[in-house]
Image 1 (tube, rainbow, N blue to C red):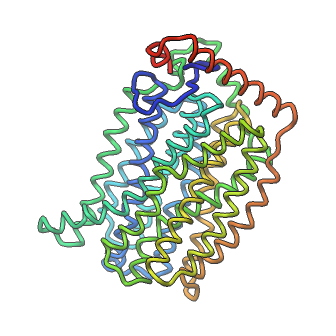
Image 2: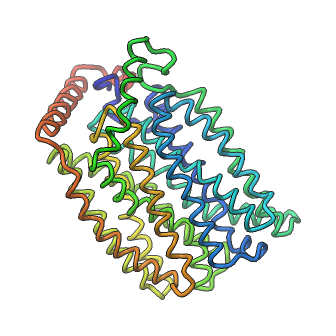
Length: 454
């Protein structure tokens, strides 16, 4: 079905007929591969540590570098999406971002490895394009679910890479390469996959349901340019910065766990590299459904209680996330640790989905700017958390406990994300119109016609 501005009012997972659904599937796949390349080296860090003789402080710097530059990249990519469109922006990011992923294997010292890890962090900006593109393609009644699902399935790359990269590494070892060569060749695999996806993204998506920016009328382009001038207005909105911190408290923590989970289980539970990676991968696997749940329940809360309902739900899941992390940090028995990690992961990713069920309603004229700023908050949170893992006299469990306290405390910031009565009425009127239109089309049109315009 089509809603306002020809946006899709439903999600048909098994269809590629419409540009909305092609964008849906290619955007999550692109984000998945970026995540795979972004954290592909993480489960192999024990091998890299031994080869390059890295200290705990140096590993901490590497963890921070992998997410630090993404703060700047996400701010820039949101503006770039508004200027040139998400199709070209994603294509360029995938192809250019694949280069440091492939060439990190040239590292032969701590300094060179750090620089490549820093460069790889740029591809984390892919999240902003994913959220921008699905927000453009889907109507308000399903935008939270669409955003959460594409981001969640993309984040799944962070879990799959924990499981798959040790296997790719082992395959190169089995083929006769020594370990110092195997981790280097293993990183070529996600890099090549990113290049292929970039080509597909260029060929099979459009900037919006109406077409690419270059195909739009002069009036539409002028309006788009005027809207991009709203960046500073979005940056001046305190609600955007409250969401910046809240997203840092969920996605930032997910990035942190992706970086340290394998080495955490390897060191604290004396597990081999493959087993530690398998367990660490369970954290990311929750993205199959957990982030979607956050967006889905955010949409439902919005339908039932308006925009404030979306915000209250976000605050609640952030609070539970912090409490779950406190429990996980205290687990010293392996099965209990795994169970606690899975529960913690559920609420981390629900919080992420809930955040981006709110973001599309903050400022529709500066959607790229808002998405970029809030998305950058995720990486800022990861940078802040990363400093705790550099401290020599602070163990990983102690660092996680401190982070849990901070996360629980940030949930109160949801109280700052408020909407005027006028915005509440406007959102409710738009929602009522969409739901009425959807019901009318389902009753009045044959099934094949509904399928065609979804």
